[in-house]
Length: 470
Image (tube, rainbow, N blue to C red):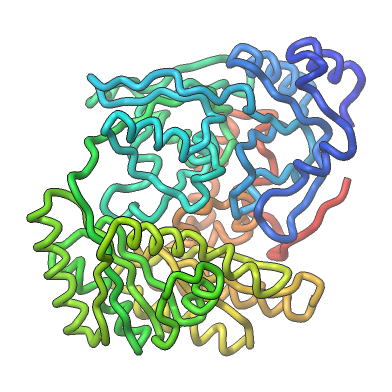
């Protein structure tokens, strides 16, 4: 627990209304969207500006109190679970859009802005911010930046990191720094902006971000390609890219996912096929029409049994919404839902899908596979019950084999969810000891007292999910 001295100093900065160490409030922020990780923080603090963040960090650094910056808690790697206690920082007051600059095509926001609210404000100006994580209706920009969130449009447009061009951040010692800016080119010194994006709150606290915008695409079309062979669907993904077509969205859903999503969304998704590809293209009308036609030809050559093109934007929106609801739909099956992500080169999608199916059968589990097939990012999602300890043992072994297979195929243990606490035991498989040592050197340079989201990213001895009580 915090000492009375630290508590009084924090209250003096943010006032009593923005400090809470009641058991109820601490319990609320003891977990995030990751199953089976929980730990009580010592207090919840809600700063009102960057200067208050600076003062909070100075005190926490002096007294070696852990700091966990938190958005909406939608992350899936236990990245905002306060595993070592300390102070959870909330940004409910720092939730403003500061500027939309139409001349420089940028938007400047505070970290607590809800992603979809920001996207709506941008689109009212006829502009476009492509990153679209499935959690965007409730996730915050600060959370997106800390996790380097992806989304359905990542294949063509990239992820959050590709749109963050400037940051205001507070170092663990309380120093406020600015990186980047409204610039098309900037090679002055180390690229701290890109270093901080995806650093999962382990280096700095982000208090402001300048994001790049682009013009809104003129038009878009959405199609479904239906398959009776999951491997054929996976092969189609590689063939589409090999034909020099980069769709906006290229998603895959297996039959198990289709069934639970249709049961949930009731929009007429086919459930009598083994897999579907959800494909979208945007741009000038003539380019979209040409690409959709070529994509359909490729899919037919790979034995797609049917090609369906959305007749209206409402129909297309329903398909996109259904895909985004995949996690919620699977969560209805059993009390515990574990959504993972493993990424491989696009050319290995078919092999990875095959491996996931074999591992699922080996361990006798219910795993639905869906994800961003166009960029090789699959989401094997297990419906289970944390109270069944024997089954949970099998779940852990299955996911360990899935991560191992992804690395064997030239991939990685996470494409967009982050490492946090959940993937920390597996990080060395990807980076080796030398890579971990290099990262720890960076961490030590920025955060010598290890107050910034401690217990995350760097490997632990245990490979099991744990519930920590304090």
